[in-house]
Image (cartoon, rainbow, N blue to C red; front, side, top):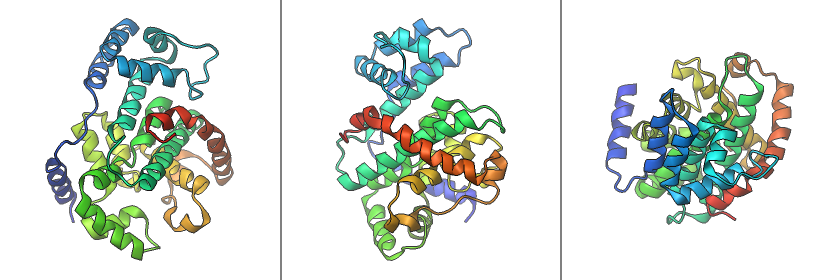
Length: 294
């Protein structure tokens, strides 16, 4: 199947979904303002002030263990100044996505597992972005968002494509060797990665983010040397390796050939990342609350 055919298939699937969630207006407004080189913290704070519920969430996350600030931040403007505009944009995106699927009629076990893995991957992306810069700088907050969103296509399939999801589950139950995306390809003729990448396009998210979501299982096929797609690939693998039980080992998969060499990471550093991820994940409580899991 050609890439164009896959795109058309995915486009058709997405366009037939009614009530597809979208990021709030405040995210799009902030994204526009941040792209203006003359943008100020005051302008971003003014946009957030139009959405009091989002302002509260941004303050909660800014004051959470995620940032570990020395003192409490009590205004949105102060939050923008301290953590930066790019961080605020990514916090708004993260809070929006956590909110989008909350309360939907989804299997609670699936939802719990989905968010725990997505958050673990986000935290791992953040760690990798901070520690490995041989291939260029990646903003740690943007990396977190990419990790949080990497499997968003799974949530779309589960919430909005019940017939396809049922077909996938039936084959999944009989296939204990392949990773999820390979089972999806066999069953549905598209994958959660493709759905997620197309959704990122629909939502007008940064192109790098869409590429990282689309190719998080096969970064070399992206045709990009941007380290973000490789970071998400490694983080997805590491979060499974760190937290999956013994009976789930078949779901972990493996890293693509050449990924560690490309990122200049050795096996010893990889093991260290698992330990650091366990520690960082303890900071996930505020995000869990937003997803309705605690």
